[in-house]
Image 1 (cartoon, rainbow, N blue to C red):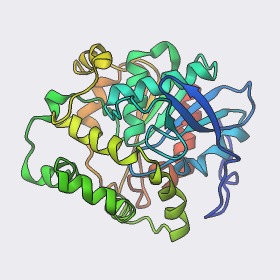
Image 2 (cartoon, rainbow, N blue to C red):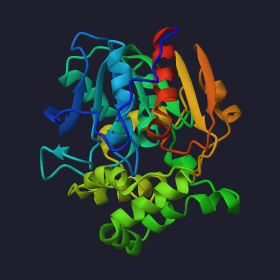
Image 3 (tube, rainbow, N blue to C red):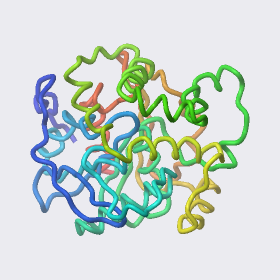
Length: 313
């Protein structure tokens, strides 16, 4: 495919999205953007922590210009997404986030979609591709194969690698919970700088996403997510079977492209460490130019190109 995508982007600071819609899906009332033709091939874009749907501001118009329907939801604990019940456990484990994505597709009557994401969103995209391949026509995952397990999370790493996960250990303490509650914006800004050391984002760009962290469930979801990974918080019984399957590191057989920025300051594995987990049509691309962890926002052309290319496989 030869498509000029370079002119489709809005200028810095613009919001490519229209109004945020709301829909009941599973245990959530999900806030999401629905852009492009309603009958176009669907693309589900999933953000991570500490980011939000605005990571896809410049990706979205590129995809809609090529006839795709783009769905970009706020994850549980972000933006306008809310739990339908006050009694629902504020659970951040990986299987719960994946079930949220499937429930949203069901609510929107989307049978299949290319699923693309980074950070938490990449993990969810990998899980959908592995466990629900009939719903996933292709996957684009920043930093590759991110499916994990509590057993793996309990294994010690070399000191230099452990240092990269400092925030996870901070969140394991009550001081960390209180600190994130009090300083969530300062914390997020620090992570942005560490994870993307060469990305010169402005205050308007940060503030637009940071507003999503004011969600009343944000801190409980984030804290549970990282404590669950270390085995310091329990998951819910309804997800136990899924977690058991994920602990076996299931292969991904749908068409896949993995991406990595050449200046990603967040913890990430070398592509050679996970390439074998992708057993279908597969390609890895390293994105240059000082691209960090928030690859869709830092390199939107390359992220959108990967989605368009995986569609053709």
